[in-house]
Length: 83
Image (cartoon, rainbow, N blue to C red; front, side, top):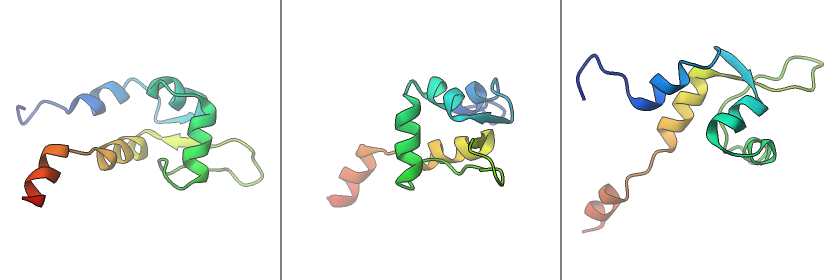
């Protein structure tokens, strides 16, 4: 990857607004809002903001990018470590 080239996930997410709701995140990930809620409830989803007194949840684009990058697994690396 060229030094100036952006990783694919960052480039794709730049099309989203800086903050968005669960429905937008679910749509972008190809998941249901229920899946997003379950991941959040289990502490396995991206960081989120819940405004005081509000019922809605908002996600920051940068937090979602970080969560996706930190969730990446490379089975080939795991196999080499076990040898």
